[in-house]
Length: 97
Image (tube, rainbow, N blue to C red; front, side, top):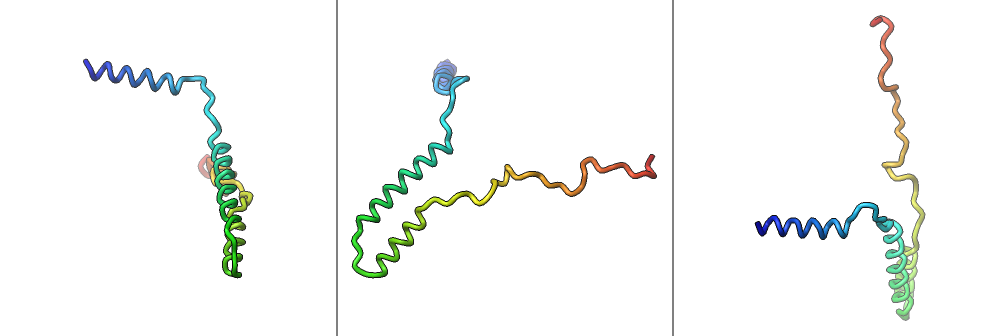
């Protein structure tokens, strides 16, 4: 009996948390905001480092270039159009009637 009560409790809690009709936040937008904030913090920390030689300054420039966001190259694989070479279904041969 305790197992049933515990299951009903957790199912009720799950329904209250994930109820129908609730708009979930956009995961891509949240990830982009988190990456932008993280990159800003890292770049601020790197800018605080004082360089005395050319190797340190070069390393700072390489890291700064790596932190800059680059636009996507093209469409993701799931958004690419399907270019099939043969028509589907294949046409029936003339001799088959």
